[in-house]
Image 1: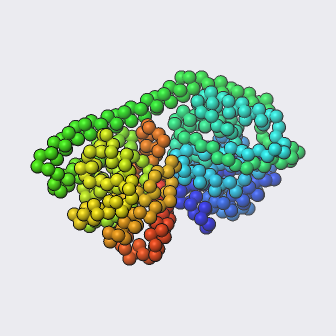
Image 2 (image 1 turned 90 degrees about the vertical axis):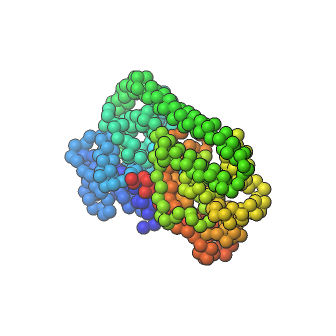
Image 3 (image 1 turned 30 degrees about the horizontal axis):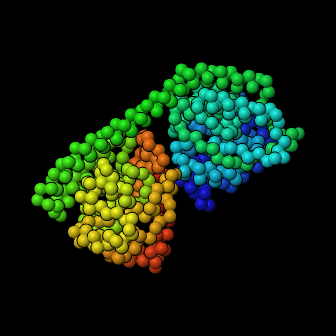
Length: 496
């Protein structure tokens, strides 16, 4: 099993190929698909030629057969139901007529890893010499226009059947049609339900006109599509747009509520801490009390009170209790990351950026808690860090430095590993998932979602040296480790 096949299987991604009388192309399409993915479901939609006999001779596929042709939409429904029965979370659909390239499946895998909740829609790249009929061009433009009208979104290619669907988000979205036009209906209802949609460029093959096999029935099918769009436009007014407005209102309410909750806590807590610290001076014991307070407030936000619509969970694989100082490294996704760190122990100090350290809302609290800025480099705060380590504190560092927009693991800097070497500390890896989806890097509204923290076992200085003789090599090795672990965490959440 090659790496892509393994990733597809581990993420619960299969391929569904509906076919109706594609005897000239279906075997080639299926065999090329098997070269890219081991989990292939072929739905024989009442074929009347020798397609079924040809498919029965192909090993390694799951074949679904029924006698009467019911249309592409029905075939996809049956294929999705079979995929769910077999335990899959996603389905890539492609046509059996040979126009789609199974070799593009890795592109859908990469897009799914960047956007795990989204429908990935293929965007066909037409060659300049492609002999594409006027009807095909008009139908796609017609469909794109009405999709934009009905949803307020624009997709470059709403007519392609090459897509990746998150199966759990399709429940109840299909109710009107079962034919060729069902794919458009599914996109519209999914958009109304708030399912993200992402376009992914794909290649397409258009054979000479005399070799093409098409089941599109001109006037009749165009009439069905026009009727469907008429119904969808009506539903957009009475259901689609009101639901979209309601969803935006709930996101706004969730965000405002959480922000007010946070601000009220800060407004109430900061003066009390200032008064507490002013009486008798800032002692180490008082600073520890501030750490305990921050841990409690983080627990209130993540565990006790919770963020509305967000499910938080922890897995402490290494049995870590932070009773001995260490350098804690964590991947960086969101402003919510620091809460996931502070909730673990009152004896954690976070290295921050200058703007965080000087923040008007919580800057005073984190300065009292001895968080340290690193805008002058680690060497500038090293004496202070040694003192904190001597007092039993662990140092938390984001080795990526800055967040990625798609939550992928970016390049690790050497600072955390250089720090561990200078202070003689173990490394404690903490893998964070979901915070970047709940609060995206360039977003300001909170989304519903899952935040998961997994704490792995300590890595000693000797074990770290086995990963690489230099801090650069150690940083590179740990990034690979984090990429693998992040995929494992994501896969476990997807399958749960």
